[in-house]
Image (tube, rainbow, N blue to C red):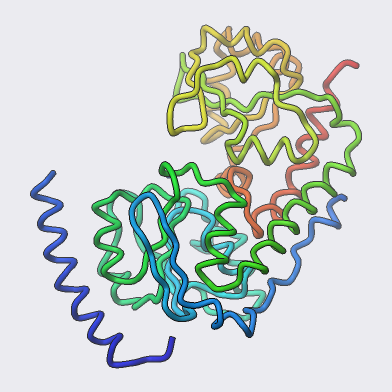
Amino acid sequence: MPFSLTRVRRRALTLTTIVATTVLALGACSTTEKTAEEKPAPAPTTTASAAFPVTIDSALGQATITEKPERIVTLGQGSTETAIALGYTPVGIESYAWGSDKTGYLPWIHEAVTKAGGTLPKQFDGGEDIDFDTIVELDPDVILAPWSGITKEQYDILKDIAPTVAYPGEPWTTKWDEQIQIIAKALGQPADGDKLIAQVKRQLADAAASRAQYKDVTFSYIYTAGPGTLGVFMPGEQRVDMVSSLGLTVDPVVNTFEETKGTASALIGLENAPKLADSDLIFTFYTDEKTRKEIEAQKLYAAIPAVKRGGVVYSHDNSFVTASSIINPLTVPWVIDRYLPMIDKAVATIDR
């Protein structure tokens, strides 16, 4: 969107609105290795301007984008990657230090932007303490947050900065393909969004086709919140869908667990570890090697057959754990080449 006096006035109005809204909020009160190579992002469609104005409904409000956005800000996860894959580098993104590498960025984002010769986005704090001042300074045309946990109070501030696209249902529950569709619509490129979805599915399908040994191999994707705890991610959760799409099958027992609303997981307790006895493989992650040893030293945990024979696919590389937990056009090709050898090693422990 070209620089204009309207933008200057909008910024001045936004600063005032943010102060007022923040005061009110205070007062009221997260096939094959070769096939998986990253493909060039589609260039912004020249006819994208014809798609505007566009209106997108969300659980928190309605966003009307009147012109083709040029200055994009993203919150939550996945939106940055999809925007980049559609040919746009956001001017600002929510930082995610836990999954970043030594560059200070999520590595697949850093690689994609630098490879394209672009300017890395400015990072800012998100979560419960969104850095609204920095977002105002970035002067966005649109704020993309369809897979995030922004609150209604935060949304009401953000929408006064720029049209803000939030999640259609509950926080952090938007499906990966739905997220791509929403972002592509917001950027005036719905057809390109469909192509990206097809590309992601093809990359995963090609990887699955290259691994006949994964057929009929069951798995459970578990997590712990410290000694004595045990949780299981449910089908539909993105990290589970990632593994399923590579050709493995979710252990049917997972569907017998009661899901904790809004989490796509079930906290079953370590006492229920024996129920995972028929899972050929266990997928999980640990914060570090010390934590892994502590968790695996628990008798009930260690007695899970897959754990006992070494059929565990795990990592304590925060970047990998992050990438393998979200499905989007940049993470999938980045993950596949790293994931397949890990899964191969675990599958080899199965006595068939």
